[in-house]
Length: 439
Image (cartoon, rainbow, N blue to C red; front, side, top):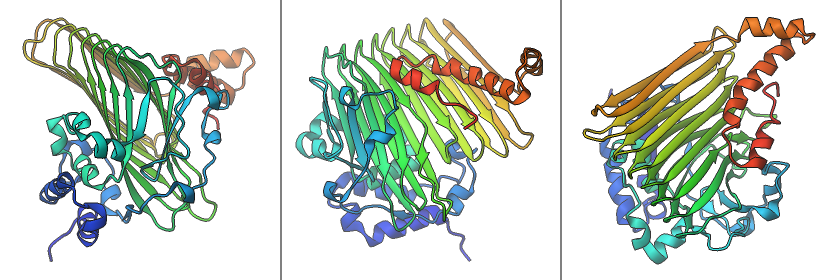
């Protein structure tokens, strides 16, 4: 009997049965659906998924979400997702509901900022965005990215015009409403910063469904010359159901293109997610470009998986990766980071460092630092450390009258705060520091 792949075969079957609703009359969607059918399944040896638990694909039992969206049918309290120290009237709020842009809940207050449904932008001005879609040829090798092209029903278009510095942060919420079935949702984010533009984006994914949900998302983010972006990807949240162990799985791809003199700072925070997998690529595409990726993960259970690639394509570019994680119980934390410097590129500096604390003998940690350098004129470093909490420091705190449990929590909070301190948004940084790892 021919062995079938549950993940790929089920998706192909559903799309074939619902072509008019899913593929519509889009040549691009049809082209990528054909490509997906020819590709090997994600768990068939693709490097991006080599460390992922196989059951995410082998036991795939989700329906594809392609229902039509109507704002009037949705009732969401967005206020509860904002940090409690943030005034909702002083920030931009962008909301995707089940993969569709919501005019009802989105609110733009910053002058000059253009935010709208990605479908609306494509329908009206496709030429403006076509050049940014699928700009990375390697994306064609990734089955989940290809899948997202033909399954995404909508998304959001964020444009910061030339010489505009957006002072108010942009909060981007992806919300899954209650559903009657387990669903796979797909959406896209296109974020463009023109020359000398500045902005901060704070992203959250939230599931209010009593069923299991998967969000597959591709973000394409482009910084033109001298642009500055702070991008914060905060913890995925699931409103837990008492009758059922509902989960939120996020499969995300982020493609950052950093132009001349541009600065891109990215911070990713995972506090007890159900399952989070992120593929993050930086293309240092202009001289004097800078990129930083800072990450903290607290993984008491389940899996957090990061795969980060920084490509230095031009002279005088700099990058820095700082990854920290705490793994407990039978959790699994995976980090694969790579710095790649092309032949002939000069005066490049790239650094990568990962530190993981394990609180359990059953926790599994995989850290794979990589340097791929084809030039002599570089400064590159990498380091990785995995271990238990420092017993000497715990003993010292106990000698000052602090009990063992509280001593450990103090050390863990201090460990996380090194990443939180890199957050440039004052309100967000203050809020993150109120989160205790004991909760």
